[in-house]
Image 1 (tube, rainbow, N blue to C red):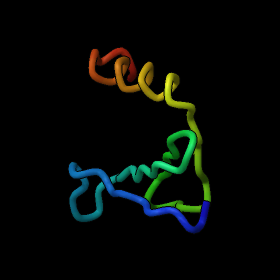
Image 2: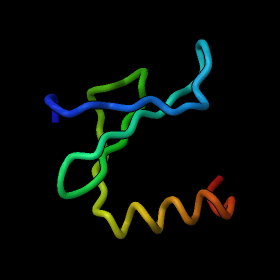
Image 3: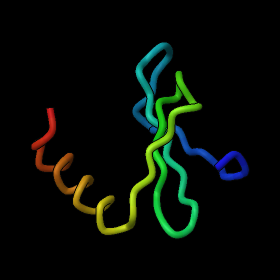
Image 4: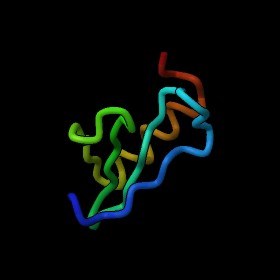
Length: 60
């Protein structure tokens, strides 16, 4: 996944813990901006479930 464009969260500040997201086909990839070698990939439906849980504050 080295040739894809990573997008840093708009909520990142200086020195903050940040998440980066990329959209390689056919899914979505997520990584910690401070440790870019570790990536997690999701399929589209799993990504939607994850975002729903985040928006409902079900993850802590």
